[in-house]
Length: 189
Image (cartoon, rainbow, N blue to C red; front, side, top):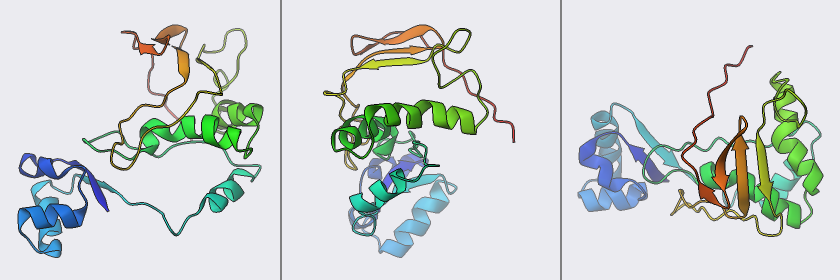
């Protein structure tokens, strides 16, 4: 288990380390260290753990074949060492899983955009049509690759050339622009 976020300034240096490493460096027994860091942070501590060896690539592919499956990420971006899913999830689908045949490129795009928008009732998102929100990603599928790891969770994916959010360019030729046109969406139950 690796610490991703620690609210307490006195424990911030432990972000990115395993609980065992952090406890050893702090000179405390593991259970005591966990209680101390949670108390000092008022429970605002994030961590990640690998599913390996429990969840295999075959398990993931089996889930991906289910007709109701839609792509998504539960990656949380807080802290100095977040889960690699935050920066790598969608590139992994578009790159690895398309190139290895789990989905066709068309299935992948549909699962990443239209399927989720439809499921959550977002009629003007997830599709390219007149009067819909212009959210567009332009990429070369041969070069899309996730690069984030458990050790470097903020490593950005590669292969995205241009990204347009609400009609404004936020990534041009692989470089961020200053535009911030995105907004939170309120979901209706």
